[in-house]
Amino acid sequence: MRLKSLQDPVSAEPPRRGARQEQCTACHTPDSAYLWSNERWRLKSPPAPSGLPVVVILEPRAHLDLGDLSTMHAAELGVLTVRLERAIRSLESVAQVHVNRWGDGTAHLQQWFLARPHGFLQLRGPFMTMWDEILPPVEEHEWQMNLEYIAAWLADD
Image (cartoon, rainbow, N blue to C red):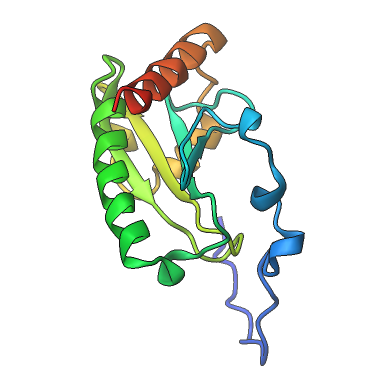
């Protein structure tokens, strides 16, 4: 194994996907593609199971990034983050929940929730996202049940 050399810095960073609202995929995706939604927030999952029991993504309905959130949106994000973490962690197959936001992909805020499977101590920490791509996918039926459970938890307000 060889370490990859660090490239020289660029003078201008490229724009993120969906920097303009009219080009934003999230803004043009119907609610039917989401697990749960309300008047200001929507929750989705990747299209197929991965190696983790749950991966879900919370997005504001409005074209906002983290630093653009109003005080109301910020407060709701805090409450929804706690509710989602509780819902996911209450699943028997889940030990912990990692909450992440990466700012380099899309300009529309996406807060990711990744569940570490119970008993898999080697997956602890920030490299769990890499393990997600290596582990065999969770059974489709279990994955679907987990997503339905989380959506029901949020709907039960």
